[in-house]
Length: 189
Image (cartoon, rainbow, N blue to C red; front, side, top):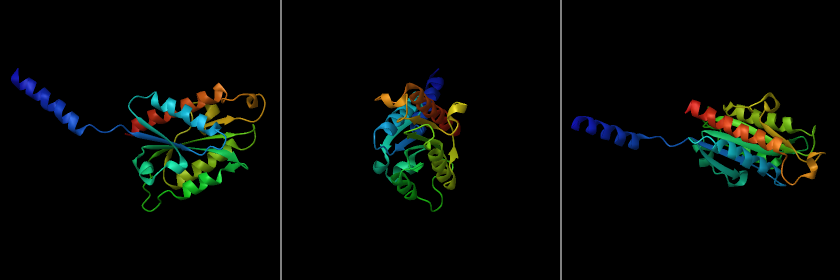
């Protein structure tokens, strides 16, 4: 019995010593009006619904290089800006470390918000994905065919322009994206 107790103690102690930290999901975004921030928070809620991960939610101007390097997944969001990503987001991406490709094999996902139904949400998401692919990241889309590229929201066209909060349908897509990324990270971790 003593040997069994000793073995159990040593196993428990070694598990404590060598236990890995939870994988980190970095959700980062640029938001002028607060709409992209609402989507980022919904994505964060979805990711946090998976207990085995940690989540860090930061504006792009708060992200340090160490944040990028420590993350197992990066979820990046931008509002539509003339059918493209916001210039501040492009500057942020241009600052990512490239030498020796330190972001290679990290999970990547994207989201966008725009004022109308055909104003460029998918173009923004594709441009963000292109940048992630250049860095060798592994991309994850949304949970349904309607969110195949990630999560997006319409904010300035009827009937969605009359609400202070994003429509629940868009917030649900964000939550689902966050949860899917978290589950995917755990498969790779």
